[in-house]
Image (cartoon, rainbow, N blue to C red; front, side, top):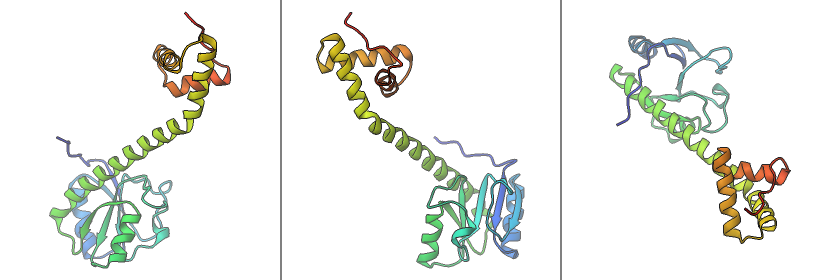
Length: 194
């Protein structure tokens, strides 16, 4: 079971014009222990550090959130009063992991924060995994070059050279790809026949 987060001492940036809905939202966030900053200008995380952002998806514009696509550096909650597909699409493109329908109901705030933080952590984990897989794929030709070097030095077949490379990686506590790079670059000696 996934633990639900505690939002005490979090900082929330609400990008919305002040109104009664936002007053209710702000009160509920403060009850959860969240410090709230309300503004209706583009978010600058250096100027306004925040752990989560709640954004008016009805009137939001691309420069309001400074990231491209859904690569949000923090969780995003969309505040939405319309059913316009374009506004929903905009929120998703900006990385919204949850939404709070307007008019704001206090009981919808905590679940939205939980969903948005969960969606953000899932996206972050997937991006990290993809980056690792892309690096492994990019280094695959270098691994093959290292295997050929080991084959030549040991007079072994490809499977034996790969086992040697794996054994060396385990001894060094590095990935096969990083040991292969070291061998090809000449930083690691090519293992000889034992």
